[in-house]
Image (cartoon, rainbow, N blue to C red):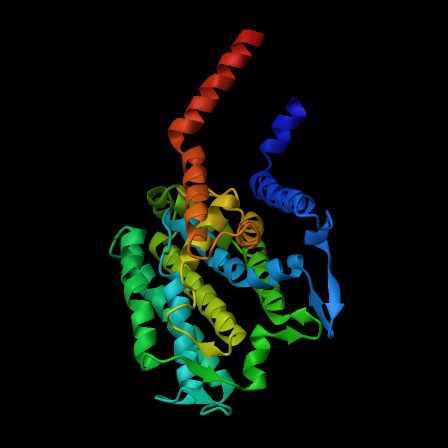
Length: 351
């Protein structure tokens, strides 16, 4: 019994358990459908590239994994969520494609400006969006969800204006590469792995992670201790904007076009759910980046499973919302207090 308690208290218990549960559902589904029991894990090489449902989960979940990095820091530092990341993705991709194609152009096979200019502009505008959100939260003391609601509404609309309300296609191989394949491996998987590795190294080798957690636990005490709480929160929102920009470019390159109506649509929910599934408290404070990344791929595995079970893309967010509600309720103070009380009663009976 003590071993089980130790296991359940481990940081990665919730995300790993959730991932294993989703995998188990896929195994049961395959058996019921008469398919190979371990079909979910089957990986093959066809036409020189990797195929398999597991590869699809890693590939399609790359954008959410990148978003989860920034969202984890924002939740930890400000005890709030950035609901504008999906719109910022759309804006970043829209600006990039508009520059590469030229304003008013909808279908091009050569660049109007160098590729690096378009991509740098897309990332820059995303960082500016993060700076705007961070300023409202850190210096104007506006509640995070309310502050980020502005760009949630306006970001996608600005992207539409930049693209003249059209889908802008950039049919150039070097642009498509970032959403395609690097050898046999999908490029988005490599980009997501690099982002996670860089974030992990920075947080481990610098004091930034400690500062963020300190501010999230008690902003006033951190300020008294000498930390500039406002700047730390501002930095977290800029990083979140940067992650949204990178994810937006990956999503844009994947379909080699700026479909500003659909890029990043509802992805803010996936990013928040990834953080929650990662075992992170939505009330701020300590965070677990590895858990958030596992949570992000769990979300994609859930989405893939729902589609396999015949659930439409329009209905899938409903099931994800239910999962968010359950996690938030489990993490709430009254529920935690109840379980602590029950545990104390059992210990008293044993004594």
